[in-house]
Length: 65
Image 1 (cartoon, helix red, strand yellow):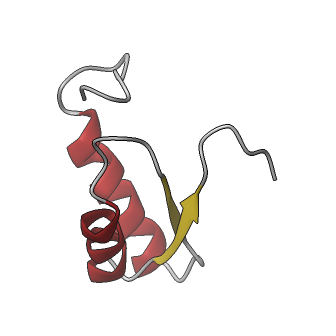
Image 2 (image 1 turned 60 degrees about the horizontal axis):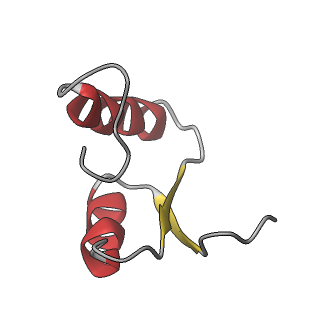
């Protein structure tokens, strides 16, 4: 919440996790990305993605593509 400042409030993170689970559960190839910003625990983001059955990709801040 501190980094992304979701406009839909505090419950946004849990809803995103549910969405990822639903996508994976319905056979949709799902990729979770994470930005390499200061204060972001990249290993934890990867662990969460994998625990939900999604692929993980690290993105670099300011790099497009």
